[in-house]
Length: 445
Image 1 (spheres, helix red, strand yellow):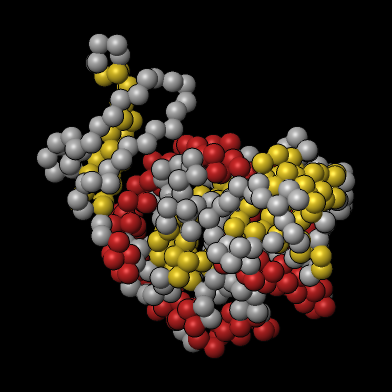
Image 2 (cartoon, one colour; image 1 turned 30 degrees about the horizontal axis):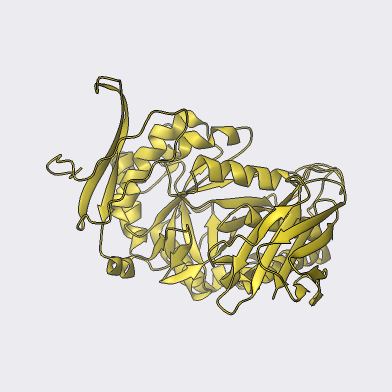
């Protein structure tokens, strides 16, 4: 309906059902502001229940040119006009008013070091109340390294104990004015991607976060809000669907020595996120890059790679790794080990970055049947040059042999992990062996 007049412009009825995905075609509507209203009617046509309205603002496609960040109908992020697979990092640091301090960091572990990996998004959750001039310099240096920033604002409400420590004058005028002021100020910087609004909080915070979401969006169009669920609250994900632009979950499966951890938890939680948002918003997963327990220690390079591709296969449009800062890489005292851990993440993220054009392509149905009974999960991509990519992972902690029936025959296969010929395809039949929680990345022609 038209927001200003309340006039219905497009309507449609469906029979009530326990679950339904409904589509309403509003293609013919001109640009403007509309409300989408849903109601449950009884047999006589009387309203029995209603969901809060959604506001839809229809704009010409060229309006995207004015937005620093936005995501498209396939949930791909566009940053500075460029489609991007998000590779992000959490970190911690102090603040400064010189770019060189941020670039070098403490003992050489600053933005210059971060840029050794193809990182394009950063969260520094120590800088949520840093002086604005220092934040401006920080964003300058990040942007020069090709990295955009999410400002931490998950404590910008009086119910949080940190709120009283915020020294911005706007904080004394209330949370709405604080969020407006920070969003207006930082939103003027081309290096801002958006705001980090939620970190493992329970669903009773939904009204507070949604209120903040509206304030931030109004003051900084072209920014996104990002929130993360976990620590026992991941099953509340559907309740958060409308409270943020991008949802994340943080499965940390490595709690014991290699071989005794449920790595497939990453894929399961990614599906939780996708189901929660009905695949209508991006899901960016947060992956373990720290020792959660003494018994588990650090993820190995193979585990980092497996967790990353599990999330990708399940539809994640971005990955963030926790953490380059405290409790993570910054707490590694041995210089050689620190270098080693970082080099492992650099290699894994560079492998993903090298396949960015493939990952951003529309999903394609490459497999018509498979023999694992769902134990092996797959993602297919088809490229304009005729190449097809089949990504797969084993959900079980035991070796598995899987046979796929391809939609179209393959004359050759390439194992992207080794650069050598992959398992031989015979017409439309392709059989592969995957180790425990093993990942397969194949190019088919």
